[in-house]
Image (cartoon, rainbow, N blue to C red; front, side, top):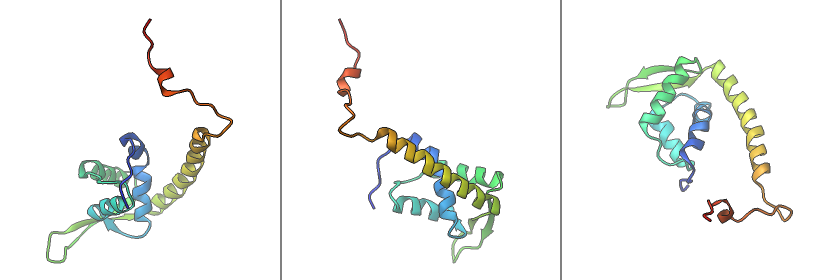
Length: 126
């Protein structure tokens, strides 16, 4: 799937929820989470964005972390969703559905909605 283009602040707002959703499938590690996000079209999520988020999720009790030996390579830190994390995910999904529906309804254009031309918002000089 091609990466979607979205403002970074949109992604920051939902990244935690998306990461929790990935973890709902079972224990996983940072690189695999980043790969899954890329595979579904979010593009490359840098470690400087992902790993602090994982640390916050752990600090807030939404995930637990454990180091596991690697297969012939370095160990990996695996993250597992806690019951509190599952509750947070369920609540977040419900809130997202409500919010995204409101935004979509608000932004939907139809024949009855005449949008001003973008240039009408430009600063006019006398």
